[in-house]
Image (cartoon, rainbow, N blue to C red; front, side, top):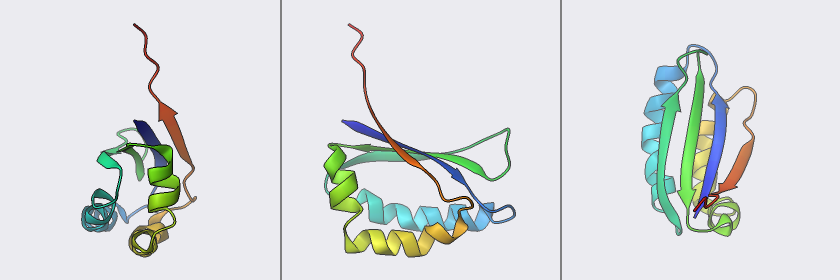
Length: 98
């Protein structure tokens, strides 16, 4: 399992509109092959700042299957105009400690 972590900065004053758009766009990502789950967290200390966490079965499910799909184009259309600056996406793999 891969964890995609994205720090999102939404343009100030657009948070409510963004959250509504994100709810709708969630249907897109949740329908993709390899998708496991996702959650959006709002930062209490910085206005307009969110953390998006998405669990994928493999890295390629996100980087190829989702990012190179027609569904991603719709995701972009619905959400990318809210971001300033544009977010950086990072991927993590769990470290087994036992």
